[in-house]
Length: 158
View (spheres, rainbow, N blue to C red):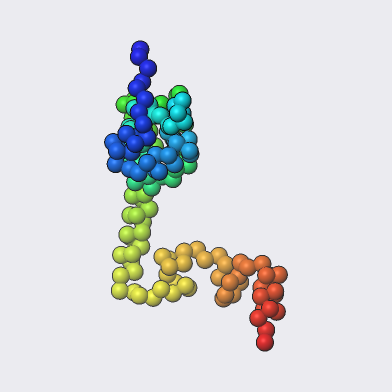
């Protein structure tokens, strides 16, 4: 099998419609493989085009670069996802989508119960301040360290 052709960073940027700086960033973060030529320039396997496309799709779905890197690390030899790989990865994506749909459906149901209410009450509204466990301590910033609060009060006395 012939080795995969190597292409320049400019070629990858042009083919994916992204800035060279983004391609460089992905390479520096270990999301895409690159090598240095004798002249010190980066060279990329041509298949990186599909890998960059995968990264962009995953980002559009709300995945962080750390999560994308973790997903790509499941592929052997740092390769671009094949059709079989994509089938496995799409299962993860589908679970993520289903969880988002469930959360949005729950939010929609809660909003429908609030239409016309307009209360935005910390005591009653399930959307505005869900499960406020700190409310029992009283009003104001209850999570500040007491030493920090004391220092602030002393330094702001007139």
